[in-house]
Image (cartoon, rainbow, N blue to C red):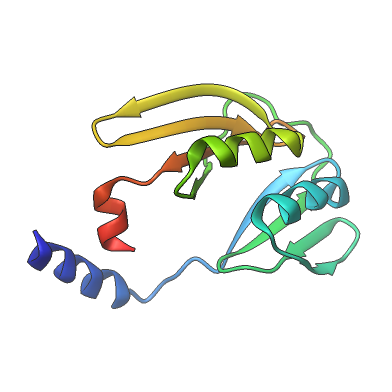
Length: 133
């Protein structure tokens, strides 16, 4: 298994593209920035009115759009921490809502929504995820 993981890592590192930023559409970027800076323990790199940029790798952008979110997210963030329960409690104290719980062999997750209903997942990393990271 270790040989397969090292080949995977070499292949991923050799890619020409990388994710530089993830942007979330929202109605109030400044308000949502308050939630995400606390959730990710990061800071605002720039506030441009209709767009707020948070520091990180990848960076997180919050972009004002005129229409509300409708339907299920097409993309969501997967956030990892060793103590899923403690992190879910911290995120709900910041205003996140728990939408669902799930599991698969070796993997547990909680689906949450930020203050504007944008979904994200808080995962308990599996042994495979720990080996790759």
